[in-house]
Image (cartoon, one colour):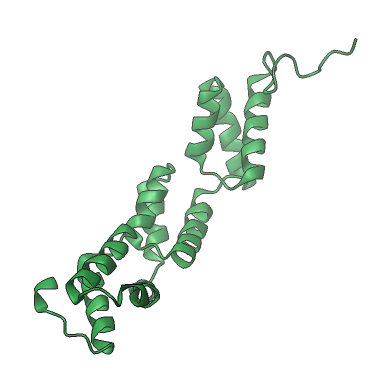
Length: 177
């Protein structure tokens, strides 16, 4: 009968804690990029001793397998262009994934205000047609809600909505600004 060289369980039950930590990190990183905090949490949940986890995280960071700055930059680029999320929503998502405040701020600051405004305009243009049967106030509320859920500030949202409705020839009341 052949014995397993790694010891007990799939993560290596009685194997070297650093070997277990490496296996966990490699498995998770092959699925999708992860932040240092996400990997640390996964190892904590699997009972990897903190010192072994820290050693592996430090080594993977040295090797470039873990790079929260690159993760944050790619996240902002992807989620802004793919889902139309604004700085505020992007920052919240990155913080939720354990990225530190300075790295989050640096990543979202790369998103130009003009770029964010242009994305808000595109989102409103896409949604505008589906609101044509509604009165202007209901349209404004619906469009503003959509932009708010994506993290856009209300001032920008209402300005973009007003411009879009006025281009359609719809009178917009000033009480929305």
